[in-house]
Image 1 (cartoon, rainbow, N blue to C red):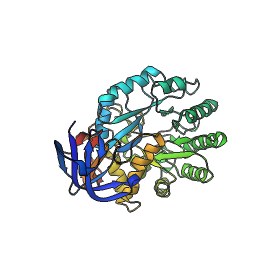
Image 2: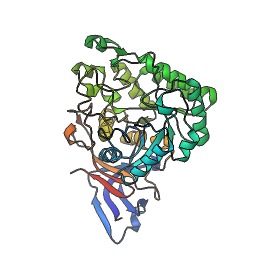
Image 3: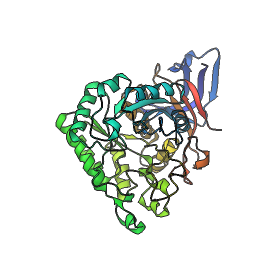
Image 4: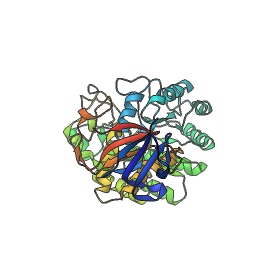
Length: 420
């Protein structure tokens, strides 16, 4: 492995209270003192670019095993690298589901040669059916880094409660997909747009009821819970109140909820259909305010690849959109260019905060820590699905001009992406 010296780069490292021009030295895969750089060193001119800790994406569907026509571990990590993501959390709704220690081991083994660090979520219930608990301790021993039935809620509340208590004992997070299945089932957000389209809507209450349940369990048992893909104002309000009253709750939202609203569905393009669905402008503004005041801790993508054939029909298509390659650019465009927060605050939401929730060695550029970082420029570019690096192209950001672009990504001291 060649050592790397990045010279004259603007460094933004929130956890290290660094925000200014400097050099970065990477030796044997870790950050080192630039003053010690000598010998066979690759020199990268960082002039005009900014460097930040590699992004940590808490919510990714890699589709491997079982649906590798959509994505696999290697292609997903290639897309991650192109977006500045150096660590990601792989959700369990694979085929078969990650409810068996062998699936956890398979993902970990295959990820060894990937362009990003892959952490693995084990399912809370067998087959993600919500009714029969998995052996959490065995899954943890196999290498599980978190628990979730993401893609579905855990139907049996008592199983969810036990999972939260077990996760607290093991020191790993529970990632909660908040949805009441008896209210859910629609194609788009319930309201004016669903009426115009003449399709069944999914009310915000479906998410809010699920959020309320998980907060109630965290409060009752004094254990942590992480709320996934928050999309409604009411859920934001509940999370804020819970945090203010001492409940151990953290939360994430996704870039598509920050940039887009349900109005996009009038195009009748299934790339804008996801679960939770795109909501109203009021919800979008509430999410932005929640990121600003700390109610929402992190930005994650819910990267969900599907083939063009699957997404061809607006009403029958599965939910989900890809997002890792565009996550930083989209969030930067809305939040930094939009004057909501500083670059340092954004990077904290997408890197160090997420690393703390998952409790992994990431999100910082301290000397001695793993050399995961990305370089970017304030540069306009337009999202072209055909130029993205994953297998699937179902991006809701197609044709949108972004205000920042990832130029290089380094993971474990190895250059895994260069913008050509």
